[in-house]
Amino acid sequence: MEKITVIGAGYVGLTSAVLLANCGYRVTLLEINKQRLDSVKSGRSFFYEHGVDELLQSALNTKKLTPTDSAAHAFRSADIVFSCVGTPDNPDGSSNLSYVFGVAKEAIKYAKDGLVFVQKSTVPVGTGKKIEKLFKANSRKFTYVSNPEFLREGTAIQDSLFFDRVVAGSSNKPAATRVLDIYKTLDEKCLELAKIVKVDANIKNGGSYIQTDLNSAELIKVTANAFLALKISFANSIAKLADHAGANVNDVMDAVGADKRIGREFLNAGRGYGGGCFPKDVSGLISSAAEYSVDMPIMTAATEVNDSMPGYIANRAQEILGTLQDKKIAVLGLSFKAGTSDARKSPGVKMANLLSKAGAVVSAYDPHANGEAKEDLRDNIRVCQSALEAADGADAIFITTAWPEFREMDMHQLKSVMSGILIYDADNALDRSEVEKEGLRFVGVGIQ
Ligand code: UDX
Image (tube, helix red, strand yellow):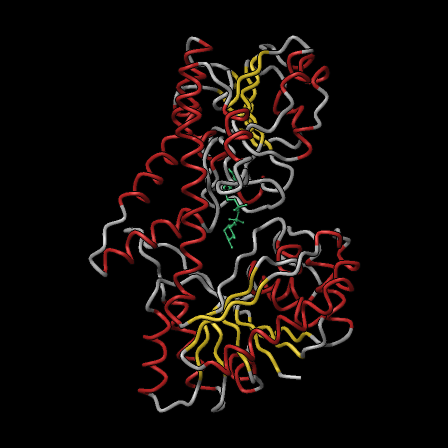
């Protein structure tokens, strides 16, 4: 079996490394951040993600996974390298590719000829060709394959095991085929792995293997994310209209999404999208299109709608409460979505800061993201250890992340600690009747 090196123990890198190691591949995982590396070596990922720790421990026990901070060792031992480093956004919205090119340069320095260099990081279309040129200019005989990642945080293992599609694009077809073959091995093992992480194996549906040219593979990834972001902003635009016209956006989207051409997924209105992918992938697409002198007004509009949502919700709350000044408000949900501790570009954090700036006395709580969110929260926001602690004495509660813990909250108990009655469901997560039966006032996004 091929020897694989994964670069970067982030969400994508660590998930890929532990899955491949549990498929029987010998995997070296390069991570230069000491804290993250120590955490991985001890069998714990530095982020919360269902199933990753179990697979990590099993890979360490069988010695199939070797975490290291030595680039020389990691590259020299590899037949195939999966590059999974971050591509954060620059202040102007473009993608910062310094880590991506850094990995390519290290490969040039250390790897042996014949290396298959697989790019899993999300990069603007055209990046692969630039890296190919770099390899050539340095007389290295590497082949480059774009293999974009589609996993979602919170369901990363499940998405990887039960994928809709795997894409590999390269100017070298056999290299792309070799990469797809690795995923076929993963597919064969998927039921076994599903047992270790206790995910429902019944959802196995037989994903497709798609081979394309290099530029198309790169464009597939950002196009998919941009389209999903577009769906959310579309749903949020309709939600605003529903609020003003007196309609229920969930009912509208249930019926609209029943049309197979449209589909119901990613039409959930709420406080907008956040996280490490959508905001930067959309701005990255706009800026990469601009490099080719192509305008993307449709994506600019999606961004504007998304950016407007926290303010829109705060304004509506102000109308309902009369003023936000000195109102005690609990914001429940600081991760960018349920199922993850990730608070990057989190709408819940934005909402909490916005309400606090408007004069409200804000307390906040998240089951997994308190620690990560804290540094982005205004100093005067109190971070609490439970939903009930945050709700104590509150005039209003904002649900900003659809955690099961919030969906299943005992509304009777909640009301008994509040001083007001407003429950603003900013992620359209709750069962309205459960809220109203306790005499609380329910308001959603696009649901009055
Ligand atoms: C996304 C893509 O789904 C995944 O394929 C890609 O590889 C990485 O980016 P992720 O960022 O983990 O994954 O989260 P996702 O579940 O897509 O949600 C993104 C954001 O959109 C969250 O803030 C979520 O709350 C929001 N969202 C999602 C909505 O507001 N409405 C929806 O209907 C769906």
